Length: 207
Ligand SMILES: Nc1nc2c(ncn2[C@@H]2O[C@H](COP(=O)(O)OP(=O)(O)OP(=O)(O)O)[C@@H](O)[C@H]2O)c(=O)[nH]1
Ligand SMILES: [Mg+2]
Image (cartoon, rainbow, N blue to C red):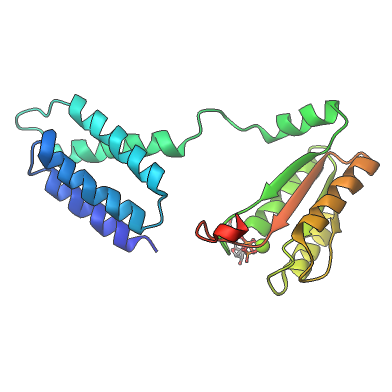
């Protein structure tokens, strides 16, 4: 899936090993890198930030005279990407649910992402985990779009032993979520897990 991007990034590392890591030569290479990221669906502001952070880090390094420049650039790039990919705060699901519980409110978790990446399966796993740890759960089937989505979630719910709030196919996805939240409020349920239809970041009207 990412072969094109991998190839371009490898070429970028090759080229950086042959130029000075400062000034115009690195700017030209970073322009190419920025374009490759954008072509591979990285949002423009994110591609810009990655490249400017990367440039700043590259300017700080002193490459040893006989050092392995390519390896050094690779490791700086890896560290730069980590800054964007690893959240600064740890997300503690149980803690979020328990804080809501103290307020007598359900925690509402919406699962959103690219088609077929495991949203529904993850909901089943999390529902199971929550039940095992003594919390109560209801699922909302807000994927009213993909054929079989409702039956899939219902089967997971049956196996895990939780309730699903659903509407018919083609219905407003928000209505199922709304009903599930109200159901959880009225029954004192701790968490509402909302399943949504897969979507790409380019589906602007769905985001
Ligand atoms: N190996 C593996 N397969 C997984 C995992 N999670 C999900 N799958 C499989 O990936 C496929 C898609 O999973 P779903 O949970 O339906 O994905 P989804 O994001 O809900 O898909 P859509 O609703 O169509 O967007 C299924 O065949 C799952 O069995 C996982 O952690 N490991
Ligand atoms: Mg799904």
